[in-house]
Length: 348
Image (cartoon, rainbow, N blue to C red):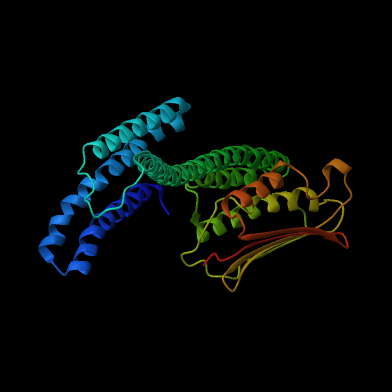
């Protein structure tokens, strides 16, 4: 339930409750006497009887609770209610003293006993009315705090996503420039073409990924171009397979989500001195999007093993932030083959 509807809801409940209370007296009179005029005349009596409780309720609801109890000025809440109780008791005692004396048919009662019972009733009823006002205020406060917490969490999520993306682009640029730098020593023409490809990739990464989600087809084209660029530094002993056997249609996805596993595969899975492979696939399983990246595992230093690096750490954070509870992320090494499998559930 949205917070901006809570005050309207509580106000509606209060209006209905006060109307029911006011109408109780005339309905009771009509049912007992079957006299409509008497029932209508009793409305004024009901209004006079409910007026003090109405004032006590809204003085607490609009002033004493929000300005006193909730703003660390509890003395205002307690003193204010004691003053209200004192005024109400004084008016009640005055009314009893100046009221019509009981008729001769009524048995005699102890005036002090009646006065004490009346004051106890007034104090008890005022306590209940105050607690009722407090309950409404706590309900509104709870939903406002809940909404504030959700808003702050959303702002923190957006800030962290922007931070992760700001890390991703320089990380990607650094590794790609290293690839082109290596290529210049082998084939200058290909290096020049690669710079053109890199320009297209950076245009997408820097200007077309500002939104939280991008068309899946555009992301697939970006990954193809990226893999082609990374493949330029590989020799004939490296087998590269790309299988995007799916129609992206109008699907949307978080940008640059699968680049880190692909980058990791080329960085840790390709060895110029021995046979290597990189396999990348993207497919649909029902309503779920499945990304699989597999690569050969070559012996490296412990700190440079497959599955490590800031890119993959950021990938895990992005999945947590963008698809909480809607993804599975699996990495494993079996028979010198490293596999990264990411499933985005319910993407369509």
